[in-house]
Image 1 (cartoon, rainbow, N blue to C red):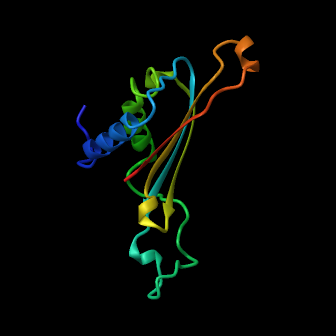
Image 2 (cartoon, one colour; image 1 turned 30 degrees about the vertical axis):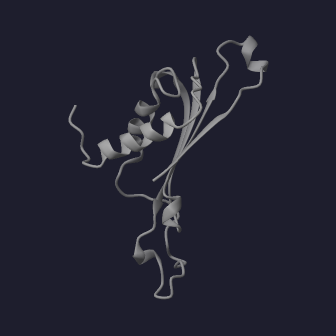
Length: 133
């Protein structure tokens, strides 16, 4: 498969490095994942005085595609935070703007899901992983 974005290798490397800095917790079995991608706002979203325009969008609805961001990110979690990205059974994701460019990046939250009916009554342990670049 040929990668469509020249920035994808750098993104994957940034996710890989962030995951490697975390506590080595491997989630095995079904997983719920939430990816919150944040992009720095372009200058056109601000007034001449640096204030955010009331017409500035909340959601980032241009490239890169959300599905491609998710795919690249979950592949880097395989073997480093979750056993396999095929184990992701529930997923939620969003692509928004942030006013402070230092907040740009992704927050990744993964949590184990119950594997059996009996396990549903047990409390799931949340593992939160954050990457900002």
